[in-house]
Image (cartoon, rainbow, N blue to C red; front, side):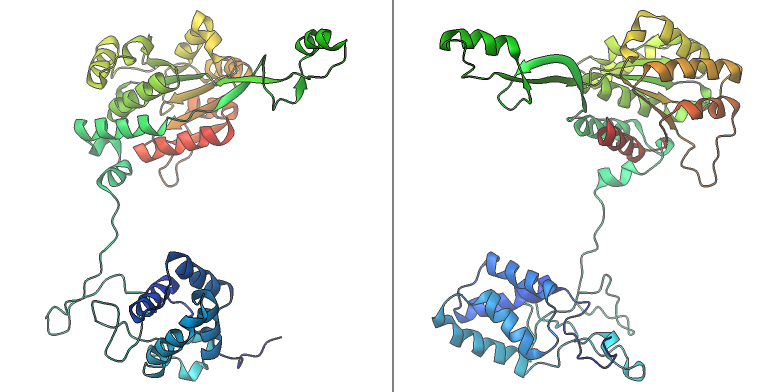
Length: 400
């Protein structure tokens, strides 16, 4: 078992990349030939074998950076200039005794703009995230950029009710771009492919007729894969008023990219697939809004699900992914919901229920219809922001 008094570890908890880049820049100014590859080698070497002493750091840097015999003198000169006149290298706080631990064990970051200081040191310590003004209120001149998310990424985490129409359209276009890759399913058909595992008997025998019935050329085939079907059913009742516009953007993205079937329901069922395939986003949303005559009214989830199953569009559910976006408030009895979801479970490949209230801390599906449908769902996911909708896409692509 190693003792607590073992040798100290240099550069613990520091920015190895900043250290390597600054040191290589000093070597290049002195005439040593070193590029991005050598710098990356040094960073990887420091991560794989953290130096416990100055001589270990010397040999690690020399092996990673020096490629020619003529560069040895330059390397030794720069290494001595940097570390002989600089303050002691930063030590790990765990390498010091408890009584000696303080905030001064790390080398301070030099204030020079070129990454060097008057003493020849290097900025191996990570810059602080925020630099405040001095106690006298004067600006020290040192500024560190604060990393912030892009405007679109920040809006994706905001609830739907806090977004205006322009922001919803922009996030809808981003969701459309995220749907470029859609999962596929294996069909019963096969196609000729040299990398296939299955031998195509008829083409192989047909070619063997030309070679005296010797199967010189073996024809192979593999299954044909097609995009998996997807059906969306979105609630547009009064309780879903805040989410209706965003869900229309989601339905259009699925309809255009994944060739999905899209339905909106309140008290009745409305098929929106033809209008959502309009080339103009605004025209598609306006026509879809006009087509739904029972917007912001009551809700009959079970009756509308049964209407889809009984219609000729019910075949699209076979082997497909069914996405139901609703808060679960239903005027139909829960027994009806149980029977409909059991039928849907036997027909669909996966059922994903998007509930805008599922992400609320402490939320539980106590609504009768939601509780009745939950045992037949593969996933219950929150859908209160566009970030939640992107998470739904990742969940589909991970298993479909």
